Amino acid sequence: MQQQLEAERPLSLVSSVAPGQRFRRRRFWGRRIGLPYLFLSPFLLLFALFFLLPLGYALYISLFRDRLVGGTIYVGIANYQQVLHDQNFWSGVQNVLLVLLVQVPIMLVLALLFALLLDSKLLRFKTLFRVGFFLPYTIPSVIGALLWGYLYSSNIGPFRDITDFFHLPTIGFLTSQGMLPSIENIVTWQWTGYNMIIMYTALQSIPTDLYDAALVDGASGWDIARFIKIPLIRPAIIVTIVFSIIGTLQLFNEPQIMGTIAANVIQDHYTPNLYAYNLAFTNQEYNYSAAVSFALGAIAFAFSYIFMLSTNRREQR
Amino acid sequence: MAITEDMSVAANVPAPEQSSQQRHKQQRKGWTGQSLVTAMMLVCLVYFLLPLFWLIVSATKTNSELFSSFGLWFAPDFHLFNNVGDLFTYDGGIYTTWLGNTIYYAGCSALGASLLATLAGYVFARFRFPGRTVVFAIILGSIMVPNTALAIPLYLLLSKIGLIDTPLAVILPSMVSPFGVFLMRVYADQAVPEELLDAGRVDGAGELRIFWSIALRLLTPGFVTVLLFSFVGTWNNYFLPLLVLSDPNNFPVTVGLENWNSLAATFGGSQILFTQIITGSLVSIALLVAGFLFLQRYWQNGLSFGSLKG
Image (cartoon, rainbow over all chains, first blue to last red):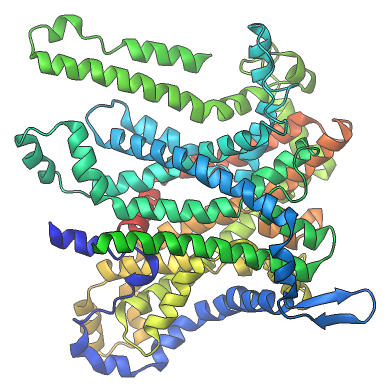
């Protein structure tokens, strides 16, 4: 048992790079470094061109500033200092943090609940639910957002018809108060099933004889979920949390689509990503835009890194 | 409405009054619990399928019915085929071009991404070489870097080398799939036995030959999983093509539809009809959903590698 836990532990993405020892006997293959790199070269070439290079380039241009007079000059970290004091940037960060604190927990708790139910004997028609809940994930997020935009709208959406029929006040999905929950709903709709499947497949791989022992001891279904299943799929849960953190901080498609429907509610800096996009393509402020994206990237990286560190530490105890 | 009716029917079905009376009490308690949970899950299912149901219903309406009739039920006229016809003939059939572009971009990216990832994953799993740990750590770390930090410099770089507004501007960056490399490494670790490779080496086969005729065959299920993921990833991608493409003839469906949507939002339906956007969404989703339902097994495989062996 303990061994299995150990084996599943190196989930934290970076720490799973443990080189195997059992291959030592074939060390002479290892001396041939040309061949592995030859095989790797197609991937590494594109990786360097379309990942490392843009990343380095972003860092580079974020250190410069375009002047109307005098052209582009090196300004060091001045752009980043400007980001630190930029109200627009921080109001965007505030929006995505709200989503992170409200929507992500709701979505992941639902996903876990669904996964446990799919894995239990409490549910019938399991395939129907598994496929049905996962289906929104296969829909492009742009189209998902478009669809919800129509559903929310007061002229062609059905909710207006329903509230009118019962003489209820119209729900302001697209007002400045309603917008963030509306966006959170779209994200929840799209990603709950995906997270559910990740947790469900992890649950499926737990050997069932583990439960038998607990059942003999008189454990309830809830006890089994609480003390056996959830601890065992911890790695999968952590994966979903990390991906949710990264995805949420980058929120772009949904607010952008909502912006075309409710332009007065979604400002050009509604999320940091939207802000960076508009800085670059509306204002042509590429240098500052690079600094904003880099700052956002740093925040996302820091968040997921701190999160993973904290889970590792707790595991070590 | 059909959905809600189904729900109530299904919720009532497991009422095994006569049959369970003789059975254990506990089992009966299990039955009621089961139907209660199933009913609750059906409510959730309605939520997850609601937008799709609305989409299907709306695609059968005329533009004015869209506004006048109740959103969640069919209007008297069945207008789906007219809508599909309008969709494919509007603006010289530009939707067909978009659909073709999407398939082309997604196909090329997926094939390239999965080939590169398979090769790389195999090497990381089965070769020891200097720099292996560091290179793999960098690739893994890149999964955590937000796309945003990349997209705008990517745009600037692509425009410097004159690739902006060409298919390659979408395809080449989409071929880089760090997550695919990670999956394939995990998969190759399990699926390709060292002994088999050694047997090939003893027989004097070259490494390329060994990869091509032994390893690749064993890696096929993993390969297909990565293929599917990258295909859907590119099919659904919006941010990258939005940035790097400006000629409508190069748009994929996602960017094209959103373009129509902002036209409709700005000009209030005088330039483009909502039915067209709705029907266009339905057509593009239908293809992907059908594919997903057929290839379900591979989806689950992939997701389980990703989470368990991480």
